[in-house]
Length: 369
Ligand code: HEM
Image 1 (cartoon, rainbow, N blue to C red):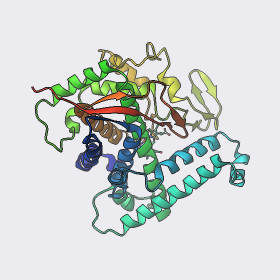
Image 2 (cartoon, rainbow, N blue to C red):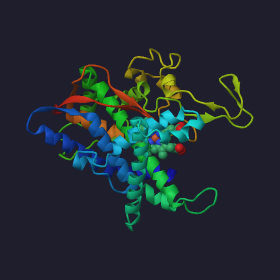
Image 3 (tube, protein in one colour):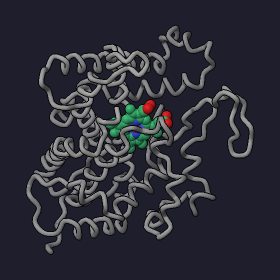
Image 4 (cartoon, rainbow, N blue to C red):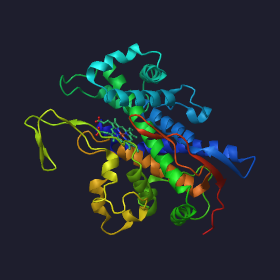
């Protein structure tokens, strides 16, 4: 799957990503027309954007959530319910797991199982629609159609391709949307942070901007403050917060000075690593400046929001491009202020997801250079 995420392929996909970000801007601008500012739940729109982008990348066609401004497929809710049930099942003893389907009257389990089923139906439908289009754009499925099974050397079976594409919808959507929402949540609560970021963006993009302007990745990938804020947000609020399990290999393994016998399930929660005081000074505090210090490179050893090793996130460069482009564009064009002063509600399933991020949005009076 790696070729689908090559730098060249990501570069080819960038204009399509920009189109979706532009649709998001249009949704927001449309609502701004009658008044100078309005309240919007950014969480809703970041979900629409991330799902449309991943649909386009995986199947060559978006889910059109931004066009319709609604989750008309109930896909987002299905993934949330499924993630929560899978997370709970993962902690249940093996013998109990098959019994779950006999608990149809507990809405938690039944909604989760329904979510799993409807995700399968939506993924299968998207697969067959894409398959029927000959000469379609180079998307993830085009790579999967040509991929070889490492064991048999033959093409992947249809059910494997469908399962893979579903895993991309799940892995590439709410992780990215929640990370973007977290950044907006944190920045929109602090006028000072917003101004520092906007100053950097004004310096990088001075003067008049075209009406269809969307921040180019080539420029935003090297903006220190933007990158530091996104990193610090993902440090303090990693989307994949619980431990990702691994099994120790044959013969066992010495981990942190202790021998762990073979076949043992081990994991360290990402949140615990990211808040470890020996790795990050004042670890509980959001302090983006830590990433701007001269020796900040060493912090990356303990920064693992995408996990590490051979099963680490394959889509991390894709996600980074989507987050930086979207956030740079939004903060350059809009002023934002959080309208809800309390804590940020979240729901924890397989991923830790933000439930709400209501902000007051205003078009910026951009200073002329
Ligand atoms: C901010 C956004 C994202 C975060 C925080 C994130 C995080 C992660 C994490 C922690 C894993 C776990 C791997 C493990 O078990 O060690 C993972 C796997 C994966 N991610 Fe992401 N991810 C993000 C975006 C994406 C995107 C945009 C895509 C696709 C375009 C994607 C596709 C995948 C896939 C396919 C896997 C499974 C890899 C495997 O099993 O080999 N992710 N991700």
